[in-house]
Image 1 (cartoon, rainbow, N blue to C red):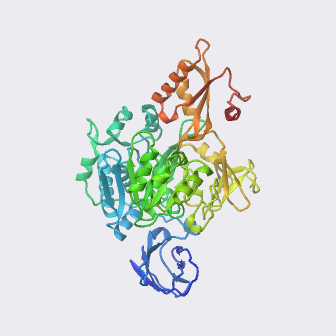
Image 2 (spheres, helix red, strand yellow; image 1 turned 90 degrees about the horizontal axis):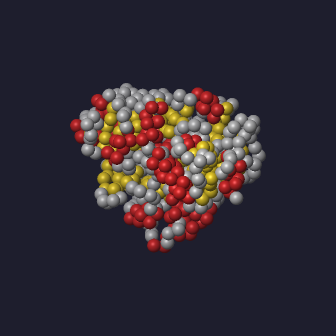
Length: 616
């Protein structure tokens, strides 16, 4: 570590501490906190400071800020106040991406050197109350063992590996091990059915699967490399036993920043789920912005994200974001439906400092008697996944004194728009916030022309002349879909919003028809395909209907075959059919039997008319 003494001269108001710069350029550190005492800066990274000045700022040369994973400071006065300094929000996303980058080696291992005994992962079993804690040093070693285990089993760099596990430590250990190896984790939820797992295994050309005993039957006849957490059936490798015997010294060549890093399946309306491919750097390095600006994570603090691990939100808030900032990730393995009471009990009992929950969960939480709980450690709350009802924000703020900071992004990106406390932005209830520094986010019409304030347009991110760090590489093996979303100088999100005169964005809705229900993204095509498998169904169209609790519910408009009697019994039968054929959260909670469906001249269903009718 390199140490620099910096004298601070009567700065007056507090300033946001910042680190920015690239190799060969001056690195500026703006210091603040309105004290007139000598500050000692310990920059954990590579390179040597060559010059420093006293006063408002100091200047010295270092490697790119992507290589600076922490800059700790402490006040030398009698109060002994501790704090931290991290990359500047106005420069983080504009840095040149290094040629080589690996999240496990360049972030986790460096935290293991800087704060080896600091808590890194804290897992709790909701049923038994059993806790397992891991330091950065321990998790660094375990991930190296996992990388060696995967390689010994036959997994090679570039291979796709389906990771389908509950919230147990092995999910983090395996995912880190795959990243370290240069393989590509493909997270999946255990809620998927055999059919949905099979689609992912075939489409992504999965080389290996790691799952729990519960997930083994869903892997079906998969004949690749198979690892299991728990008692191993014949033909499966016991992951825990293999981990114990694996070497803690992993030797492998560095991964390039542009190498495949993580693959997610995301729902679409015109077909089966799309494969979103991120590079080693686009998520692994890009989510530094998410961790600092939106999650506001800090070294030594504890962050809890209640989302399932099978979705990109887990990468945002249960993996890359918090660990970029040296925070501890808290996880609770919960089975069954979301329980707001249990969630509040957990939040009150454990020393959780920052917390992330989707609006669906928050709508249920604020219905509780919040006066029964106190959250002495909680200081920052965020939400994403769908628009947050202003009333929910009001109820939570009134009960806790804490504000919910909404953020907007996609599986394809890091946080693009948000309410960022470190930038001093006012939170306007119902607004997504303002664009992330380093991103040019605009609202466009169909001709890719920016619309004026107050007018609705499609949310787009400028990618030319310079593509910002934090966007996915492509829809894997789907150049047509990729070209559809990257047009001219822009990446088109497919979401629509308005922007007020002060630059705040307000979400309107999805350009396509993806349904967001209880934090899940559901493609209508998936549900329609399942319903059409039932012998009573002739035709069907599925939409999202507004719901006060879930945001949206799945509603199906069904045309039955002439010989079939439509009624309540058939509705129940169709719902059970969906629950058993697709993931249960996708089933239509409302079914309406109709004589015909509105169609375009080309035969496409006009869902806009169905949505209008459903809205009343």
